[in-house]
Image (cartoon, rainbow, N blue to C red; front, top):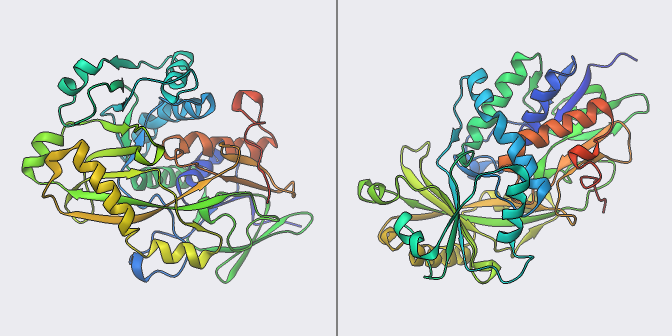
Length: 395
């Protein structure tokens, strides 16, 4: 039978829009289906996405070669995407890691330095005696060293990146459909996709619905994916604080315990006209297995206990934040048992899945989208793309 589209990408987030853009240069007859960001978050009853924000850290410094490679490839295309779309989203302010001396050869910092050498990334090691002088906004322990990536690092605006990807995809001939997909079914010779009150058919489908990939009936079988609640904290920054924090790079501080790790975004102006310094951590106390649970979380202000925990650490590291108004918001991270993203086919040779950000994928979303596009078009990923590591695990 004749199909409506050759390929359909489900999910208009960071990976899905990237996949649609890349597919537009590989084939004709592409559709990208997904809902827009809700106008009123606390009143919304449908699906959400974690890119509804103004800042995400970007860097190549990573203890895993695959993740470092994905980031480096994506970063290499940022400026081209900006130029072609006319939408700016990348702030190249650099990224600083700060932490205690490595305890053994498996320490993240030593592994990240080895990966950086392989990738040719320029990482400057800052001795403890120089760290607080170079980065005076940060009050860390006297034995902490710094690892500073000044080029191809900083932060991206995820909302703006999604707009840029969608604009270029549409210019490349992709049909953008604003709707929530509730069913994907392999009909034998084609795939049937139900979105809203419409049904669409395609030769192949890529499900890139992030943390919501297991919700509704998008996959023949659920992928093994933990969907975890995260809380982020915002400090409202005034003129005085801007003189202190205005030129800071994106920052990640590694504590002695994992729950004390913290990431910090430099001051960024938000849609409400105010400027906020944002931070978050690695605490995971709540998981979701149903759409209703995740949607309820997204309508909240996050965890009060986690907000207070992050605020205590923030004021220890950045005492000059004292007195700034503090708010919090919900976020969701999804984790795979392999530690890698999933980019592979399901039990159906016509339905593929792209998900599993493991809380580090925003910076790499353009490359992960490209891998999803290659998979759908070519039917496989090679070793140069870490294809075997990216195979989905099913629940």
